[in-house]
Amino acid sequence: MAKSTTTYTCAACAASFSKWSGRCDSCGEWNTITEDTGLSAGPGGKSLGAKRGTGVILTELAAEETPPPRTQSRVAELDRVLGGGLVPASAILVGGDPGIGKSTLLLQAAARFARNGLKTIYVSGEEASAQVRMRAQRLGLADAPVQLAADTNLRNILTTLEAEAPGLAIIDSIQTMWLDTVDSAPGSVSQVRAAAHELTTFAKRKGISIVLVGHVTKEGQIAGPRVVEHMVDTVLYFEGERGHQFRILRAVKNRFGPADEIGVFEMTGKGLAEVTNPSALFLSERGKPSPGSVVFAGIEGTRPVLCEMQALVAPSPHSQARRTVVGWDGGRLAMILAVLEARCGIPFAGLDVYLNVAGGMKISEPAADLAVAAALLSAREDSALPADTVVFGEISLSGALRPAPQTENRLKEAEKLGFTTAIAPKGGKAQGASGLTLKRFSDLTGFVGDVFGAG
Image (cartoon, rainbow, N blue to C red; front, side, top):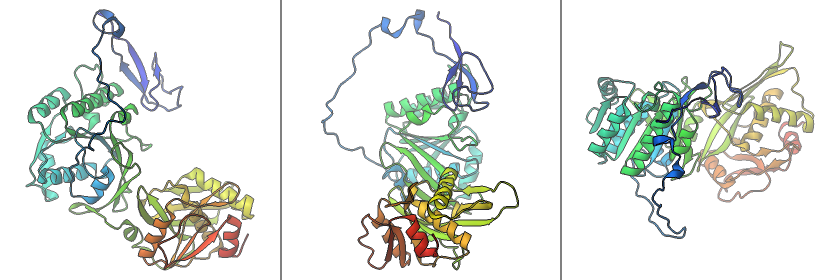
């Protein structure tokens, strides 16, 4: 019998080592290396090449196949993120911070799918069935035909799923599952990888849609090996700030629909309510014009979303000025400050800079550059932009302004919400927004001089 080899694997970068250490030499992360029991070469220690396998079926690339049928939950925001509904034989991974509402969202989705005729099983490895029922009663879902189970033994769970043959199975969570064939503790790299592999292959083999709930690390990444995200068909992140009632379901990977699509929900006393017009919700608490406040017309996935960029610039009492960012990339803020100083002659040395995206949104697209620059200049000069103005555009290191994609959709959304003026770079299609006054600039210097009378 072949001996099993023990290696140590980094949960952050999947690098392997022969012995344990506190810091990964490959990625530099601390306390991410765990024991990983390797697989043997097979019976008698023979390699796979010693025994011939069966041939796989080959098909032509040009072969025509009908698209897979989809089952809709009738929750428009969830169906949007999934790409139009749930696809059979698919594996979906949902991650999010503790207490953000992952279990609430999936219990509500399970009830909707079950009421639409899809046999649904909810397996909890973190709560007893009675606790899940209590949450269902609080959400008004006690009468939903959802079957519950509370177990962590994956062998028992797969046997039950094979006998019951549901259309949808929700596993909450993947870090609590354990396989008796893997010699390590639940939640370890080996257990998470093996459990995800078993569940994903089971979904493909039996035609069952499986949703896996994943814990996240303090950096916001799903805990465990990154290979789990490669195994599944769809990866969703449930985001939001606990101080805000808004929750955002974001697709970062989707084999059956567009990636980077978002669905917006509002946390209420009766669970999560979908938000059909996110722009109006994010701007609902915006008061009269104030310095440092600028409305950015962004694109999230396929939908335009307007949100407020807030900046505060104040003299620093310390020798080194602070740069604090919430909801945007801190490195990109440093780049915008450098371009403003180098190309426009506007220094921020000795000034503390604070930047916040209102409503708990997280913006990643470069088209927010011009809105950030406008907010910074507005705060620095103590001059407020008109309340009916939206701003978007990308800033290059030379100070030139580059047009943003889907300009037309951004302008239409702004016009629908009552905005009358838009500031954008030259170029890009701007048809369909006849009610807007469009101000276009080719470089940052012209924008600063015209809007703020500086530069």
